Length: 115
Length: 114
Image (cartoon, rainbow over all chains, first blue to last red):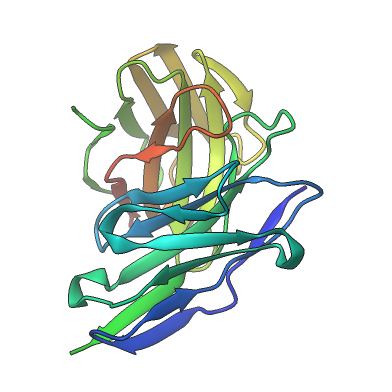
């Protein structure tokens, strides 16, 4: 079964600084990969996804993520963080080998932005 | 376009009572998911449906939990009898068929069992 690890529970960055949130997965092949963001009191919103092709994917709100097969990673990045980016971020993997639409979520990284 | 609609947004009830959470998926989506989110356990998949048929209910914690999807536009998650440890935020999500299709989440139901 696949698994997802987000090693950082909390991250604090200054507004305008760059951001990288880590995500590592365990899977025998290339899984479907997703990043979601959750603001307080709201559901999860899709930021971006990867399932094939160019390993650098662009998402909404200026986020991007890079799939690195050799490192089993799918880290999320943003060059300049805005105060409104403060939220919780979840990495998720899906199984292309017949797992249907079922996703396995990481435990999330809480991002705090200092003004 | 309307997103996933969940009701109620908040529910406070006493232990032992029956609780029913409702979800309307996005039109045209054939997969529907129920999740539970708590501080201790994070986001857990309870059950999911494809074309109104339950596919995987291995995450349903106990027989007190049941879920139905009588048609493509409506699903319920019922807890009977409810217990304080069921307090959590419950999310419904829907997607088109296909593992690469993203799930779209509702805003959740915050459930408090006293």
